[in-house]
Amino acid sequence: MKLKFTLIVAVLVMGNWAQAQTAVELNTKGIEFAKKGALEKAFSLFNEAIAKDPNLSSPYSNRGTVYRQQGKFDLALKDYSKSYELYANLDILYSRANTYMDMDEFEAARADYTTIIEKDPNYNDIYFDRAYSYIMQKEYREAMSDMEKQLALNPKDFKSLANLINLKKQLDLKQEALLDYERLLKDFPDAPDLQIIYNNRANLYVDLNQLDKALADIKKSLAIKADYDMGYLNQAEIYQKMGNKAKACESFAKAQELKVESNKHFEADEDYLNVKKLCN
Image (cartoon, rainbow, N blue to C red; front, side, top):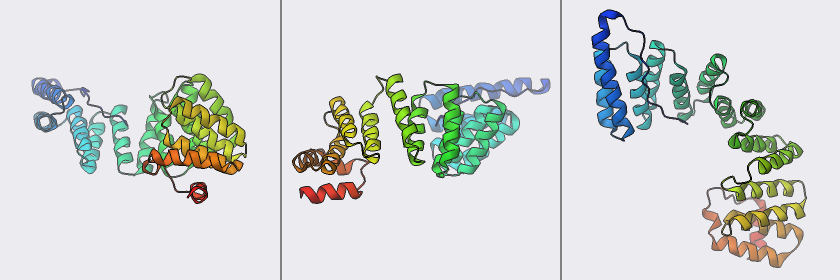
């Protein structure tokens, strides 16, 4: 999610021109301090700008961004809403939507994302963001539709394609997911953390009971990252399913040596418990 400070200036009546200019200058200084991490000084300057000209949009949205960084989401929403009321800029609406996401208010966020799509369907990453709001509520088909729309706008979007694959796996569209893995590996041969892609495709092959292909992918994953704890654990589970106890326990011991249970993606599922029982 993006945090933006804006220099947007609403149309001003001529009688308030000099006063508004002062507010603009205060707002600009506030942005400079905010970018340096001096949020208290920035906040003070945005307050002064609002006091100078309460009809200037930018200081409200910028103060809202400071509130959001401080975790004061209700106050951030209030400022973003006031800023958007004064000047209907989509960047402000996007910031409000992202704040709703911070608060787990997914339907409210989605309403703002949808408004942005209606006004500018080419807005950067907007279908991805709305898809993520669907994912958070486990509305996977709607999320898949938005990921596909995002990829139609930007076919080389790694994160959207990777998430589309995960959605297809959730929806049991496993063969489609395999085809998308081929596309992902072809289009992004130098992607960071490529070992995770091979590891995840290996898991899909396991689900399809194609254990030889699963093992081949795990070996590719470990060739990329020799200390990949989850890779060794999955390799142990694959060997266990293949009936190779020695190899399973060798891989399991390596996974434990790498403290796999501390990995944030670790889950003590049935496969883990089976291989643990086999090797202990």
